[in-house]
Amino acid sequence: MTTNADQLQEAVNPRTEIHVIPALPGFKLLSPLVSGDKYDIVGICRQPIIAWRIETDVVKETGTEGIRVRSFCYPITSDRSVNADSSTDWAVEYPDGQCDVPFYCTCKDAADLLEFWQEEQAKRRRNAVTSS
Image (cartoon, rainbow, N blue to C red):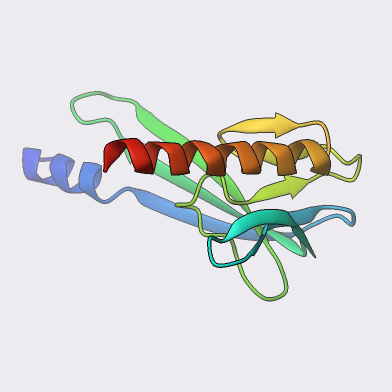
């Protein structure tokens, strides 16, 4: 028998499964290259992706018979994994050159991505000035 307390505990603590699988050659993790005292974005750093971390959360829906499943895939490089909380300051470059900023946008190539990052930085700076 499941009690309301058990249902609440399961909703608060979903079951998370983590799997790591090797990456195929040609995928790269991209991050902004910054310079100067204002940390202007001036280029792109590239690191080969060596594996993918796949996180799957399985949560029983409280008060229903169903479950909710959501999965996320994060790149792993030889020296670090991705900070999943920072949504727009990393991207994946596919072997065909297309760049994907997960949960945000897809750019046709690295030059398009650099322009996107520079525009986002300019917007954040404008918003910081207007909110002060």
